[in-house]
Length: 257
Image (cartoon, rainbow, N blue to C red; front, side, top):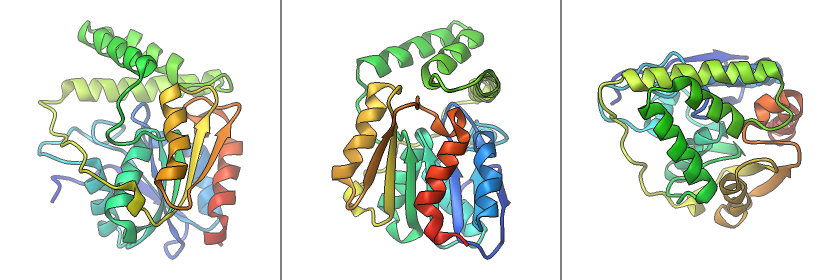
């Protein structure tokens, strides 16, 4: 039992096929605003949530895992089985849910996903070390700019960069104010147990780690599809929202109305 449900909202018909949007750790549920109304208009019952310390979700006061929060939210909303769309860290959480509870997930759309157990390569390790150093020095501005510079590709406009700045700053400030880290390590999960239809999306301008993870899911998940977007960085749903929405609707369209 979790201490409190994550912040969330819903849109679309109550009897539509459930679709859950899981955000990147750089962002919060606001990152899905460009997809929110089109997916609901397509007939999906759309749910988006904020992970702990992100957006409107406060830090945890007890041990937790984000995949457990997703399942608890689905249970509270009376949703037995849903399609999951995950961006980056949200993709990692979606994969955990789909591998450990395959009966709960019908479809997986993974945008530049992370994966549990990945050992960072040199470029990703360098970004992480610099982020830690900036935060330890109290330079939140510098850490925010590092994240914007690293994770948004060349198609992102100034408005998008400003939104990511706002979301990332809030996440940093909330996490830094937390009294201890209550997040538990992810459970061991076999991605070969995933039964959901799976689309793994990479970005040609992304860090090599994430390009490799997206491509590797072809051999790790039965029947998975992979596509690499030539224009995308790490956050394609924000960089070219209309194209990403069309990609998602094309993949999920047979399940909407």
